[in-house]
Image (cartoon, rainbow, N blue to C red):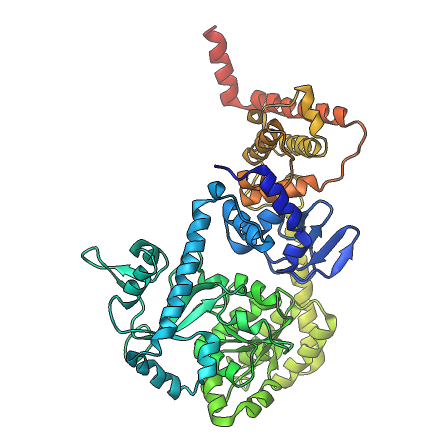
Length: 576
């Protein structure tokens, strides 16, 4: 049974889009009736993400995404329409009618309950005789009982079905545990526990939900760390370990480290701002998550080649979000945990003040690849540095770091500055040519959504106009002169138009929230952009007639120009 329209309307009334988006995006700048911030869906330095409270819609002028509060939650939380309704209802203190609840939303809720029960089971196992193996490891890593409790650490017994039996007793099935990544299927169709003889780290989101687990092997064995596989509630690339704790820090920065133990050790030493990615290189989604809670990141990765590569990737992703990025090189220890154990928290606090600006770090890393005593390699270093510095928008930054480059390789500063500016000019010419091609009349008519394309841009312009007018004045449908969706040349616009007609036939409002359940993400974004367009209050009837005439003229013109269509017409006439 579909969710009643009256429930959705009340839910939207209780879920002001500015408040909901504000949980994810820092909305600072105001222009007219809109609030602006950095888009959470793509990297940008200048705020182009707009929230309009009067219309209850959002739109990004950079990536094109847009819609209402429901579609925003669908995008940001990676949920389908019914799951987003459940999410917002929980936030608003409402209960979705039982008969209308979606099975997928129920499944997510059930899986989160299972994960919480599993986390409690693992934590309780620390108090059993078998849990001593975990306590021995915890003691070697010098983690306190307070830290164990704070992180909810646990122990997975070295047995085949301890968790399985415990969860059965709580009413969970094998299939539910298998779907949550807690069980595997055996060769004879039986099930057994995935995590065995491991120190367990629950992965908790910023709302306190246990999404999954990371388990560290106790003793010999591979893999050393094992994570929950991808499930309906857990995605490694969209979450960060300990962000639920670090979000409360009073420090002006977050520390991004590599390992769970490092993070726990840092928190224990007073650095409650540490988080870690879950066994993967930093992703765009994780970076956007970080940007919701801070403007400054300190990277602390291993000093080996893999750590340097991970740092370079993280810098590129984070700087797109206009975050201040620093890199800390640890000497005298292999990781933060070992450094703190050897030298103490005060020494580490002092070390943090020596974190390098990301450009200094990149220059020094670049320098290490060359033997600057060899003229050819010195030239190659300057060329590579000039290419990097040419991409900086600030002229002051370009000059400062060009001088730093000159110092590193003993070259006159004016030579390097000149090389940087020459490279920048060449890059700008190349960019301008590409921009001219992308802004040609044919390309300008295309939708901003990358996975949508108009085969007939001229007709699509008319189709867009019909949708915009119908949204602004639903009464235009009363004259019974609207075209059929089948007459539209764009499948996406036809789908949007059909969803609007269906809403009108049911006597319901047309808005980005109401039709979110019928459209794809890209179609919702396209619709939200179209309804933002200004439309004159006068001559709407004439405008609609003009758009319909243009649509039908384009169809006739296309048919007349299409050899296959002409042939089909001739054959049809011959058979008359």
